[in-house]
Amino acid sequence: MDYLSKKYLRPRKIPSSACSGCGLGMNHKAVIQAVYELGLEVDDIVWGTSIGCAGRQTFGTWKGDGFAGTHGRVYAIARGLRLALPPEKKIILTVGDGDAFGIGLLHLIHAARSNADLTIIVNDNLGYMSTGGQYGWTTPHGTKSDSSPYGMYEHNMVSDGMDVLGVLKNAGATFLARHVSMDGPRAVESIKKGIANRGLSLIHIVYPCPTNVGSRELGTRDAVTIYNWIKNQAAPIGQERSDTLWATGVYHDASNSRPEFSESIHQHVGRIRRQRLYENKI
Image (cartoon, rainbow, N blue to C red; front, side, top):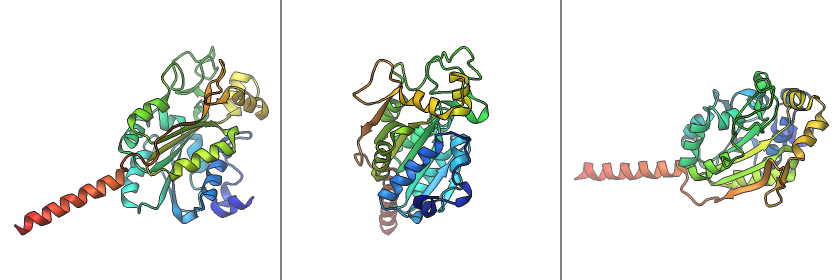
């Protein structure tokens, strides 16, 4: 167990409860590294999780306060906490692609609309891997899965002009980035920027699933093979190739440019109280 794990995490969840070769631990470590480099302590953060691989791995791992929401509902809980907690307390959410872009998308859009101060890490293993490996909202075209043995054929949320980050930008999110888990320090920097933003931040990180994506699409559970499969189809924004699936880096940075949700609510309530006090005096 390294220094950061001892400092921030519960030892019973280390090194990981995920499948052998899963990239989720790399994503988790990137978040912890960002927290450390920002000088934040355990008591500075409330960590929320949801369902599926991402939720199972990260729930109860953080040494400090945390919570779990039902599938797709973690944003509603987090917005309530944002109102109740002091503004300096950070809220970090680690969710899966289904939590974010499937059943939870409407809640996520409203969190973006209100610009709630939340940092959301979307751990994307390209489908519903904790339920057997069905294709999902971000499964690349042509990818074989349990529910698409001849290749995934539907439009997805990261191609064909339907990038979900564009949806969230238009909904009001103030910081958006995309990475693959092999991006390492670049992903850490994006997470740091997201945490520093006083508003809705989302960092979408694609990670390898050897158990389902590897075995169905590539015919092997060899971790190196699927890591390279993902790495070779990613490129920094502005350096994309014709076969690039994931353009990585900061997609949208309007940090601290819009009123934050809880600040707006508290200011509005304060105006009402002052108005009522004035009315009661006259």
